[in-house]
Image 1 (tube, rainbow, N blue to C red):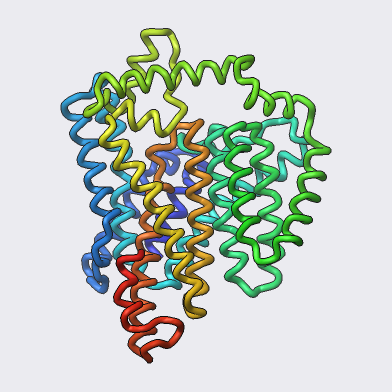
Image 2: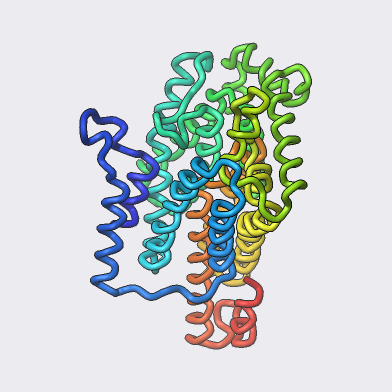
Length: 410
């Protein structure tokens, strides 16, 4: 319950809807300490077995510390950003320790999906009410308020909502989730975000590919697209056309310039980069106060190519691992649920990977939480395979030899 509460506070930030002293109350910090102390006192947890991603995550944070301490060209901002980014780590540890079953993992994913969906529904309704003429923005928090950032977050949440839909048998809830999914698509389109549109397209294609009823899903998708596009204003289409004709758009050309500057810094200082928020100094020299607008460029420019390799291995290594888990699930009916979890988590991470091409999302906590959730999913699969093999050798499609080889595959 403490981990779920942390997710609520992290994604909803309830204090922003209050006034006075409560608005500035460090609720997240207090709650984190409370959950950590309770976990230490009870000690009814067990550290999960080794996973290479946990080692890579620690190495990455160690490298962040190294670049902040020794190479940052904007030390004041770099240290502030380092401590801000480091707040991502304690909840990850709590997730690893306290989410120790499939049921608890499902509750965590549902909590995250619900928190994002609550503000998404509001945005979707607003988009429809205004005829998509007034851009949809996120809740007034630093992380997700920008329309482009909020679009990527909502795209990442669509597979989580679909996973919830597949797992529940409550008819009323299923209809509610279907409506929420439709409003999620409307809200993403209502942000007028070009990066969000590309990420949405990739995720929808993936979900369509993995649908058990592809023909019906395609018909529903075509009907929804037709209905939505009829109501979109001409100015929306004109903005989306700049994805192709980017030379005519000042915002797009400005981002290309920023990427060139960031890549140039990465090549000049390939091992160290220029430290957190180095863009503040770099772009100030050119009277352009914009961040990198690209997560890949941000990691390379701020921390060098080695950190970039670590970060990419976390993201794309997890995507590959989830693909292996989905393949493994086909070999046993008892692991059918693993396929749903793996494919939906993979779709969410691929949506992030596309959105990260256009926005600086390198330090988003949801990325690292989904990576840790994938680590736990692998642990549960290993335990389930061992259980199946121990009950009756060869049952469920697994032999003892196959079960022994599973850790190598995943």
